[in-house]
Image (cartoon, rainbow over all chains, first blue to last red; front, side, top):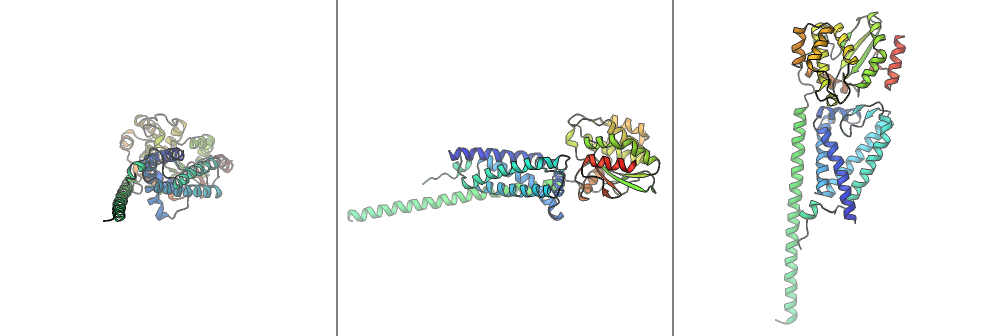
Length: 152
Length: 244
């Protein structure tokens, strides 16, 4: 049963990461602007993070969907969700009106403040699924279970 | 050999076979893990380099005549108040802003009461299948370059009055040329600038500079350098109060 829950957790978090990354990866300049809009990172880190984040999201998404290196992928996933929750929370507390840039876009958004609670709730849910996978990385229909099969 | 000794040696042999098997398994698992991690790192490096190459922000660009940095100044130099307005031609809230204050603003500019520095940017190309946002921004710069700020202001008004819905095909280059000529540009001058996207890179750089200036979206309006309002409604109200 836990294996099936794990499969569901993998598909949901992995799917979200894949879509989120794919929507951003074609617009590096926009990704950089979305990172800068949070006004949290020093300027020297804004570009590297803006360039790497979409690709990292796609990779984590693929690994989770395939069930390959599930535990390390879930650790990265959880770390990213913690960072995003902190970032959105920080923007909210500072009164910034920015689109979270979660699925592309980013920057000013008229109704941004209304979306913050829902965005944080969504990320907390996905964080919980990631933590589940860290605790129970053996899941159904995973490449891990094929590649790392016990032969003795 | 006693029966007992034979049993022991068989157990030992079995244990050693199993230990060997376990060691082989560990090596195999390590190899697979290292291979996947290696692929992940290579993909990240390639993605980083591709993103860096794909982001042309800051590349050398030709600036239109008469711009001040990235600002198109419209109105008298000695006007007592300067408004800085960041706009994307495809941005619906910018159109709402223009609907609400455009006429009063034009009157105030005419009277020499206000000078407006338009910071035209483009990040909404995804909103139309024919990249209206960047083409319209380029057309505005083309008109500024070839015919000056009054023609720029006229085309600016026309573009916001005819803004395409997000998700629909925007006006094509032919239409932009026609509007540019109506605004006061000479067709033979402005057509190649519009069709060749002569100021595309300038607009990319203007958009990057907006972000670096801490402006996170459009419309953003500064009154003598200070943000006019936190929300679009507050911005409209502040500008209308200024012009009243």
